[in-house]
Image (cartoon, rainbow, N blue to C red):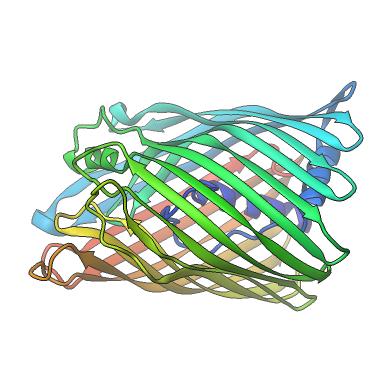
Length: 423
């Protein structure tokens, strides 16, 4: 039962997280998601837990009623409000797995869902996640290729903290070769098209999110040293390129960055971190101020999985700005979270964060802007039996700006019902 509670919490974190492979994507408060220790073992676990067997095909059904929430957003500028509203998302679908050979597995995910709003009928939409993947695990070679679409309700940018539907279309190819028993060479390439689906919304503030539509490409390569399964160190380089569609927000840029990844998994202590020394410059005369700073994230997890665990985490990210006169903002955060098994098939997680959004202006005469950010949130999951888990979530984020009219808040409280939580 405890494993099922922890699995459902991981699913909820995944649903809250930003799109995989996207560069400089805003991630909601709560800290980084916990990554699987091994990609092959994670896939084998999914296949073994699939409920139905149709010859060589394994099928894992999925059904959920999630993000049933009361949402309130307030912008201090002219006391402008997005309507207080109720929203809910319902979905049903499946994941399928086919062993083509003993070392190759095909995966298919068809997870459609419908987003409903009570007052804002124009925001009702069919979203979903659709993905096709090839996973090959050979003697010394790992090769994975995935492609698909993820379209979901999310907060796109802290400048407009409202829920909006956004779509990511793209694919990723990853290859890893075992050079020696402890040294691995890896490379990956990801291409993503980011589209924000708000053209039918009457709110001009929400409509402005379409200015962030862009095409991104990321190429990585390097070496990983892993003398033991519990820990590894990777050194490499990343090349990135972003091309914006709208000339009203010409932020196209590209650059290369050395990167470092460190991972350790202990009994009472774990660490996961990644840093990149960014060097980004404008492309084709775009309006982009060169960025030369370190970005990344790190998290320390303390305690065992039995009763009580805690984590401390921090991150720095670059986020493209919609504000007039500013190229982007630097999102710095630190936070703490507590994960507890309350017994009686109940688990919970609460977190608190503080941070700062530092804006970079195009010209010296533009006023300096800094927003102090604080967030408090959590979730509690109740195992109802029969692979059904009920979750309760809450979140409140407050942005205090040094500029008049820049203050804003976002509050949400709701519940989630996962019918096949263990799958």
